[in-house]
Image 1: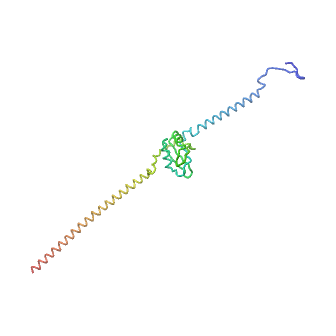
Image 2: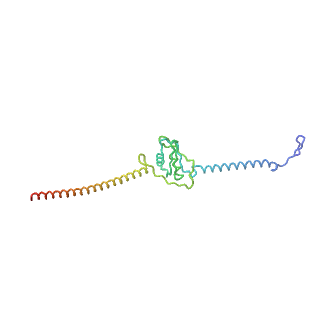
Length: 219
């Protein structure tokens, strides 16, 4: 202090906070903005993770891709039923497009079906199982599907229709047999009456002939 620098005398003193207040404020604002951005990013990531199908209990549908053309709804139903992951409520196949959907009764069963079925061979091709892209609306309930019919065996509806047709055929046969019996009995009744009439007519003719013979012999 008091020294000369060039043609000017210099002065030295303690630095104060106010001298750099503008710079400090800028640094503080920048840090606050960065904190807000980081918090927003973390919140967005957390929200995204909560809405992801694997974490959202409203997702109950399996997307099944890479299906062979010959895979039908019944074939896909038997395939997932054999996995034993849970109760199946709906099976749909988009024919000609190579994919379908299988809906389960809850989220845990769906997750197990995806893990168990992914990569398995169906119709000569490995199927690709993943989460469906739409959640099931809250409060939606459906009755589980009945077990699928085994290959080569008629479905339950077809079997019931077949049994109903057999029962109706038996009823028709019984009615036809009863009608035949009535007709036979009626024919037998007519035969007895006709025989009686023929007997009475013959007996009368015989009696008249004998009387005529007796009269001739008397004369």
